[in-house]
Length: 372
Image (cartoon, rainbow, N blue to C red; front, side, top):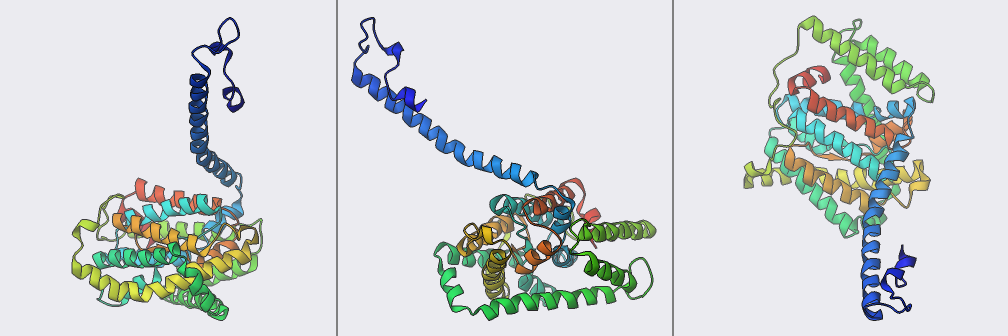
């Protein structure tokens, strides 16, 4: 079409072969037509790239990908359930937005980039009386805004240069040790050795996981998670249901900023954002970028520290305004999902779809009963 439009069309010529209406008018029409075609081509380019990425993600189907997407649930579920049980978040919007950001992260990077709760904010909320549901929203937005500013100005690269790599690796080792001790506490909290949900069940699951986690033909995390769901359903049936939970009827799109006060912003900044910003900067931006470069060297040019920082900012500025829990991309989650077989975006796309289906198809009480 551009080559045809660069010359007067035969329809514009008279019987003597001369341009009808004048050559300047025809040339001007051709230039306008060429500009319109270029504009349409520029608009279709992002759509074409998006459809190509979605096709690539769909072509990654394998049981190891699905299993790998579940590798980070050991971090997500304890904080999600605990915050919802105490009334700090509503389970429906929290699950909905976590799932949506799983999908957008998969499309953006085509990697198993995890979406985890901001642990410092959650820990302060669960162990002290300094934060409430409103100040948690403020803490998430303030943390996200600070990290996004570091990404937009590329100050995060300067911070990375002055941060020793030993600190980055130390964070990864510390997170691993912390998750192991957390698993021991969860297993001990069952209170008995032999039952469907007991220390022995946890021991069998741990041995099975360690023995077969490198087997690409056996979806270890999927098997362990499926058994856990069956046990949870059996316990719920035997008890005749679960308990009453606060805020279990909130909609996925419920505007939260209109009820925030100056005191909420102050408490959120002092007790939430200040302890969370260093952790997010080091673990969610610097450490996760370094780990992604090590695990997926072909993606070095796609995964940048400013890009990850900006993504964390956008994710929380939008999500927290509608009731999402504060979230980030953690190095521990990326390592876990990779260890259980995830290599591309399909793993977290499937996980995100499951979260959104749970949020939209079931009530908050039913979801919390099952997850609890």
